[in-house]
Structure formats: C-alpha cells, structure tokens
Length: 333
Image 1 (cartoon, rainbow, N blue to C red):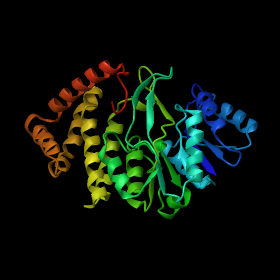
Image 2 (tube, helix red, strand yellow):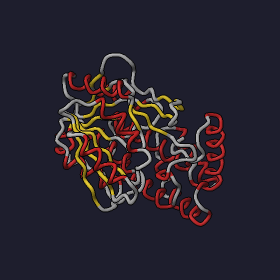
Image 3 (cartoon, rainbow, N blue to C red):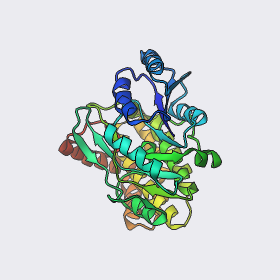
Image 4 (cartoon, helix red, strand yellow):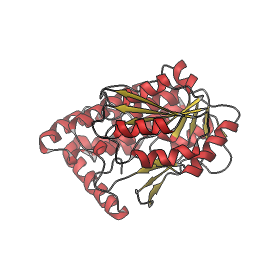
C-alpha cells in the first residue's frame, strides 16, 4: 500500500490536473492524503469533491502553517508501507507512475528509500530538462549506487523523486523542519540519506516538475528565503561526516550554496546587501572543501566581494535560461 501526500495551498488552478494524472495509477488499497494548508481560494471545495468521489482520498484542513507542517501531518496520518510526496502544481506520467509502483511492490528487499529520476517540463508537455542520475536497467541497491547517484550532476534534494518506507521515517523521527520558507527538502533529504541503512534506485522518471512561464509564486526571491536556505544548508552540512557518502553530500551542499549566489542579485535592492552579508558567513564552508573549485570560489568571494561574484553568476545564469527557453524566475536553473 502506498500513501501519496499532497500539500496544497491556493491550488485551485492546478489541483485537478495533478489528481487526474495521479489517481488512475493507483490501486484500490493505495491512498491519497490531501493536506490543505489554509487555502482561501476554491482549493478546499475541490478537495472535498474529490474526497467524496474517491474512497481512497482523505482530506485534512489546517490553518496556514507552511508546506513542512502539511507534509508532517501527512506523514503522521499515512497508513501506507511506502510514502510518496507530490506537489499540487506538478503532475505524473500515469503509466510510468503505475509501473514504478508495481516495481516497488514486487521489489525484494524493501529499501528505506527508493530513488528515481524526473523530468522538468512545461505545462504543455515540452521537456526542458531530463534528470538522468540513475542508470537505466534493473533496480540497483546499496552504497555503491548511492555514491554513483550523488556523484552525478543535479540536486538530490527533491523529496518527490523518492518513495520512503513509513516505518523508516518513524523510526528515525524524520520530519520536515517547520518554519523554513526554503531549504526544508535539502535538510530532510540529507538526514534521510545519512540515516538510511538500505537504498534502492530505479530509472523510471514518472514525475513531471512543471515550470510555469514567468515562474511560480513559490519561487519568488526574498531575503527570508535566502536566510532560511542558508540556515538549512548549515544544519545539513553539520550533519555530514567524513565517510564516502558524507563527503559526497558535502560537495552537493556546496554546489547548492554556489547556486544560491546567483539568486542574490534578483532580490530587491533593500534586501540584497543583507543577503550578501548572510552569504559571506558561509564562505568558510567553501574554503574547507577538498575541491579546488570551491576553494577558488571562496578566494574570489573574499577578493572581489559577494556582490560582484553574485552579479557575474546571475548574468551567466540568465544567458543559460535564455538558451534553454526557461522562465526568468525558475528556481535552481
């Protein structure tokens, strides 16, 4: 049995698209948990209609407390052997998701975490970027595939590309840190990877991370998002150790830190200086890296200043977006 956890806020425009792609892939014993986080649009009414029409949907409504609180409530209420997270503004490839679920149901052993790939797409179905961090073929298990996965380009901090064994999350008291407006996935996934005793990998990219033209509200730049991400980064980095997996996680975290630099010029002028000062406190993490690339980045930040380096990276990022036809405000591009 699978529990699919959907945190929702002001999702009236995308909810039906999401659920209509998801529900046909499920079996009767699977469940969908809709977590409405204080929406003031028609989201609660749409959720109630779906709950009435589908016996395997359960609806929970709470005051607005953020995506982490909604996901945590979903974890607490879930009954499935495995949990999957889906965002209400994304979709799944129905056939591929059904095949993924069947493969996990039949898989032996039962890893703590199943990792998968995903596609970044436009709502019209155009693939902007295809994640290929996992080798195609039969499922893989253990630390060697995990190290290979973490060695590939791209982020590991997408909870919706994974299926988590519910008892594993409970046994490790793994929850999302509430109060963060950004970086909650990064911290959660770092803890999960370091805690997992068994991992599995399937290259069956069913998840469609949809990128709207002009960007989504959840991707708006703000000083709070920058400082929350830096807080999550530091907490996640401090969890890592000198093991092979821990070392790879540190390098991935430093990559995320450098990506954040390019977002600073997109802050309002009033917030930019504060964001640059907050980033400057994290330069020592780059200095301590065994990677010469990150040590050079630290030297450049000290020599030229955070603002100048961030401006150069932002300019390069915009050129990259234009070349790929991506929206200007897309996160992580």
